[in-house]
Amino acid sequence: MSDATSVEHIEAMLRARGGRVTSTRRATIDVLVAGGHHRHLSADEVADEVRRAHPDVAESTIYRTLSALEELGVVTHVHLGHGPSTYHLADEGHRHLSCQRCGRVTEVPAWEFAELTTHLRETYGFVLSEEHFALIGSCRACAGA
Image (cartoon, rainbow, N blue to C red; front, side, top):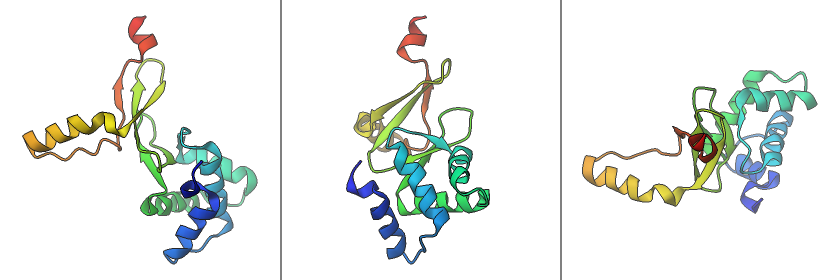
């Protein structure tokens, strides 16, 4: 984990923007940081983990915390298929390939999409937001089956 995604750094970012670091925010940050960069959790899963330690916290408070963290650029959400969007730490640029058969998610470096992104912009004037959605297809194991 980098310093940019340490609990202390994220709390400092919240304070610098005038936000308070409440026990709910701290617990939400703890859940996200504990999972590292490769853990993708739905908002409900984050809420479940936070509520294990703080059972009286309202889900809406956790959802607002996720939104605040996303506005700070600390977390990002991605749609990995037909299920709910998932949240993960945002400091390592990667994109997602999601297998429609087994559900496996493969992370690929963001630079892998650079040529496609440039081509779409130059040819069609379209600016791709490839970080928001996963590419859906079949993983190596399922494609070979």
